[in-house]
Image 1 (cartoon, rainbow, N blue to C red):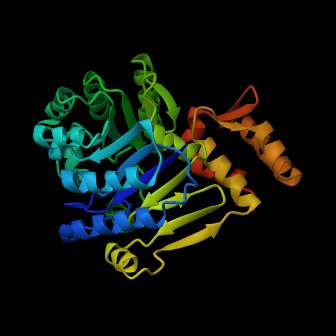
Image 2 (cartoon, rainbow, N blue to C red):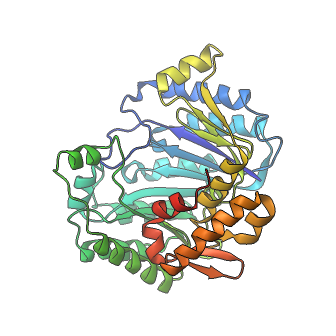
Amino acid sequence: MSGIYFHIPFCKQKCSYCDFYSTRDSNGIAELVKSEVKELILRKDYLNGEIVKSIYFGGGTPSLLDKYKIENLLNCVRQNFDISDDCEITFETNPDDLTEEYLQRLRECQINRLSIGIQSFNDDVLKYLGRRHDSKNLDYYIETAKKVGFDNISVDLIFGIPGMELAIYLDSLNRVIQLDIQHISAYSLTIAEGTLFYKLRKQNKLKEIDEEDSLIQFNNTIDILSAQGFNHYEISNYAKDGFKSRHNCSYWEGVNYLGIGPSAHSYNGVSRQWNISNTRKYCNSIDRDEQFFEVEHLSDNDKFNEYVITRLRTSDGVSKKFIEENFADCVYKSFIKEVNNLLKQELIYPYDDRIILTRKGILISDYILQLLYFV
């Protein structure tokens, strides 16, 4: 099993919280697709012949691509990789790109899963986040997607936003539940370096939400979605039975994946690779047959840290037995020492052989991971 990710970096406007590589200059879309097709061919052996069970178009804003360009990329995948018959093909979209005509074209391209960046049903919140859509037709976009045949739909929400009251967030959460979709990603707002919010915080023009208020919003998210039949299977992700994101699970389960496009990352269990985070330089390098990525070969310590980073995010947690059997004795002893300390602080809890984050632990997961790292 393996996956392929396409990064489509073009955006009509940059969201205030987004730290993913993107550009507002969309004049180079055709050239980018041409370069990504060439990268697919150049790297067709990267997955060692493994069956591709998930394909993901992320961004940026993939919904700026027309049908021809999407087909061009997918046809190249099919010509150069072994694709499973039930391959999950996810397409990230901005809500106001979802006309019935465009959705129908996505279906014709065999896209079978939509990820829609709603973020909120409150117009003031959307404006604050720098989103280019408003709340007016959000229900209509979802219903139109269902109408043309999409039965695997995920929606993004953000909580922990400065100044956002609990009632406003819960209204958005309940509105999403009423849409009768299969998957919800609810992210706690993080202030990442390079974003507008980061700049405003440095200028003392933005004060982050109180940690206790964020925890209340998070706990409400888990409780309400659980009552509605959603399984909390990863820190920020909730799915009805049979609708976990296969592609994202591949990241957390250590499955090999190939990243195509500027800034895209790849992993094959031995090394990590990441492409140039500049669309023009990426396309020029591909065109000139020059190296367009950097490589990091993973040491045993890197592999341990990789395992802990990814697995601790999930409801399955980290296996003590796996660590004992696959890593050096000193790594295992260090891990157990930190685990015992975290248990005393009620930041993790034991379940059979595994250790899993508590709700309190989830909100400070970065801190916990730093304690568990082995260097």
